Length: 299
Image 1: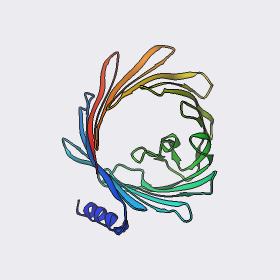
Image 2: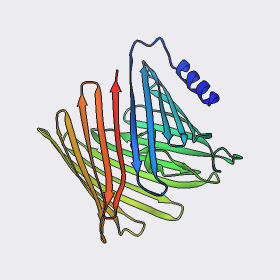
Image 3: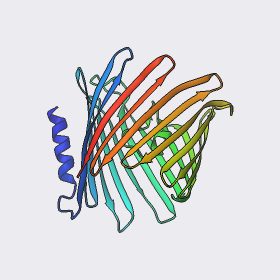
Image 4: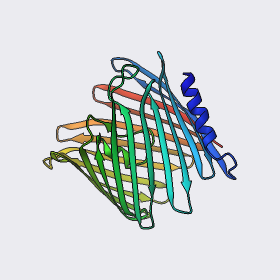
């Protein structure tokens, strides 16, 4: 625990404290899942943006104590268009370190990630391995975006598409080619079309086709996603509907395949000035999967 406190303190000190701009947020969310074993988690988040740099922390607690600590830091160099990111993950002992660099000259984008992680159960004798992801793209949104990712020693490259720091690739034994992901998007003020294809050393992993349309007033979004498996047969499909009437947004996503209904997720977001409240619930015909409640205070 003391080591983690020192890591967090060092992370804050490494961000430029003399920056002219300062903003951030604090929040918490609560996850309940009636599975076996029973799950009740609390995640505490803190984000601070200070000029060209920032730090973000996510601490996950359960009924048995500390489950995980995730820490991200980033620093931007506007003059050369380069961004550096680094992340540490404790689950609750050290499990992963990530270092990423990205940049480019419009319309081209080039990035890479280096990972060092432990394959064995945490808090036991570690079995370290490394991984590498190469990221190349052209264009941007709105407009046309084409992006490719190559993973060596890592899988689950799909998690990198949305740049969510809390979803990540998975390290695997060996430093060999594992996945290639190709992602193409065309978007405008109303439309967003995308296709994503993932290949492994065994061939096609999956293909995905998606479309979303946005009505302006009131804001209504209709979406559909189709996922194909390695032999181009339907894996699953999902339909989504989201409605926003300030300050409230509600959404619903329904997933199904040829056998019928798979799961349903419904959620709500309420934004009052700098305060955000949100909830989400997922279930299927057999019962409840999980419920998530949370808030975020921005400053």
